[in-house]
Length: 301
DNA sequence: ATAATTTGACCCCG
DNA sequence: CGGGGTCAAATTAT
Image 1 (cartoon, rainbow, N blue to C red):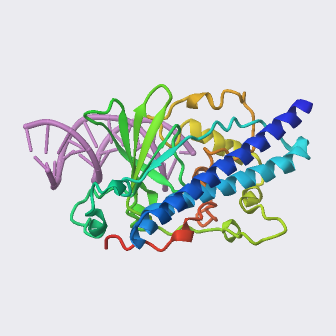
Image 2: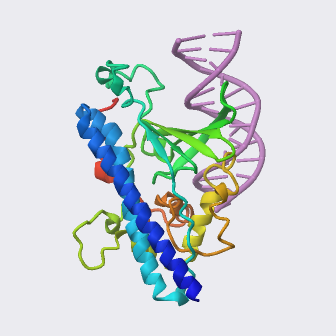
Image 3: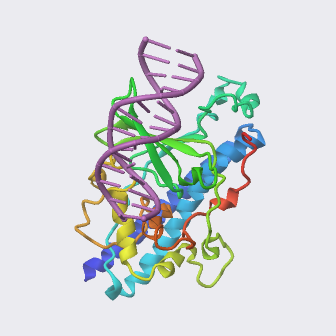
């Protein structure tokens, strides 16, 4: 019992640390942005999405912390396990931004002429020790063994490609086995509209119960949902082939625990959709603040 | 029943 | 022609 409490405390600390780290990353991005000359389009198309991602993570950390705090005082509702928030050391590479050493000056000009080719320059890419969830719903449409990669590469497109004509795609390339490492490369931008629950909108100034994301807990009455969403991540759904069953031992600590936290895995509520998709057609699909930067790029079209 | 994944074929492009 | 990306029919999951 005291153990639980200390576990909870530890988890809280971890969450806070994580939030701090993420905020630092965000700061770095912003500083880097202002130190480097980028066109608006570059900032908008490359920097923003990542910054947004980081901001989201910060918010998640807040939410998790709050959740932990509230759960701690009400232990009967569920056991809070330390979610082994093994730092999601994910590094981001913005391929288009990387040439700050003057390697390729033309990119600024090239920003709009990518229409010619189908395979455009990546929007951004990210290495991660786990499968990235980014808040969007992806549909796998292929996989390939590429010539000089030892591992499979899988191809995903936005689920709304056909019903909304959303052009976004991504590739996930496993680049390392032992400490699992994936490179996720995004192409194109989402223009799909997702029904967005107003509660989920970012509302920095709400003073009282600012647990913005905790609205999930109200959206989903039972904690099964949480379990579901957390397990789905590491097991089947997303990257069946490529998924590593025992995600770098992150879950090792947790027997069958129903930890209610949103770990970085669940970070993006994408996964929550799995149980809603059939049953509730117009449901508040529950995720995404992506609307925030919904100024769909000047790209293409 | 519908939706997602699997997987070999197909289709460019260099 | 080969490689990488996508399609689509069959299969599997929900």
